[in-house]
Amino acid sequence: MKKYLSAIMLFFIFSAIYYLGSFTKIPFADCIGFVLSIEKGEYETVATPLSHFLYINTGIFIKDLTGLHAIEASRFLVVASGAATVALIYLIVNAITKTQWTAITTAFVFGFSFSFWRNAEIVEVYTYNCLWISLFFFSIVNTFIEKKNFYIILSSLFLGIALWVHIENILLIPALFLFLFYFRMEKQYVYPSFILFILLFSSLPILNMSQGLPFNAFYSSGQSWVKDSLKQPPLQLIKDFFQSFIYLIYNFNIFIFFGIAGISLLYKTNRKMFTVFFIAALMVYGFSTFYLVPDNYVFFLPFNIIFALSIGYGLSSVKYASFKKFSWVCLLIPLGYIFAYHTVLLTEKGKEADNFKKYKGGMNYYLLPWMNDNVGILEFTVDHKIAPEPIDWMTESAKEYIQILKSKGYTDDEIRKL
Image (cartoon, rainbow, N blue to C red):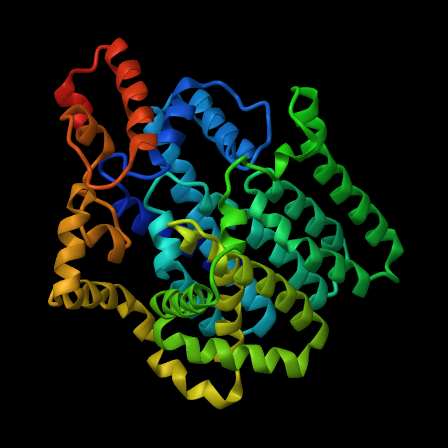
């Protein structure tokens, strides 16, 4: 009972943190497109890489159920999903380590990790996606550690649902199949689990084909991102690899040491569970590292969850028991972002980048996870500002949303504040 009370407390703590740091105005990137879809209230009927079927439909459902504005319905979905994911991280680490302080520390480390925190402050699909992925990992851990075989079935349910949120989760299928293989003797659970997953997975192309789309529409976006990624020269691939380490350091700072220790410890103590998580981590990390899109950092999030669990396991080692008295340093992580921001602005390249990106907030946008008092895409569009780089795909959605708002009686001044 105590662990569930702690999980609830963490949920409310991070709900408050994420809500206080949440965007003041609709940010740039994909945010306006998601808000526009929820505002229109037209439920998605196809599942493609760009439609995010379950995310959009959940947002519309919340809006219809509560009567909230599309912006606030989106905020609620993102913040609640983020806080619930942090609570789940706590429960998973608690199940693995049976140690309260390591589970709480890990929850704060992950909750304050830059990539996750940032996505809990904007209108994006990734905290909702992380919620389902965390439930998948929660099921795996409870099967291995708690010997609760019913979670074998739940593992397929949660990953199957996750595919309807984001198709990147297809990378976790090898880990699921290996997990089911390890428990193949538990036929009364493994067979239903496998059948359930196949049903959920196969429903993606079936739904699309019923709408006149080709079979591959559930994983093919029609863009050349993957093909372009495979055409990168060797030197660029090396740069991508080093950039992925920078992401890791910025997310987990000094706690990377405990993550590495946790990987080693899990390998020694539970080889099968280690292998399942290693396969999942390898697939996600490899894809995310070399995926040629500007915001590839978000695709590391399932890997970041796994690494956070490793941090918790590393902290639980007897060798690091003395760190308990210093575990409060995880609360200082936000100061690290402030320090990084001011340090970057001391450099000439930092100043140049800040000036180039000033149209959407400068280096604040890239180095600080919280988004309150941000520059908004709607005010940018209403004022007919011009960016120094192509953002037509954002402004087109913004113009459409502005027209909808004006049809509801909003003035330009009111729109600028949204």
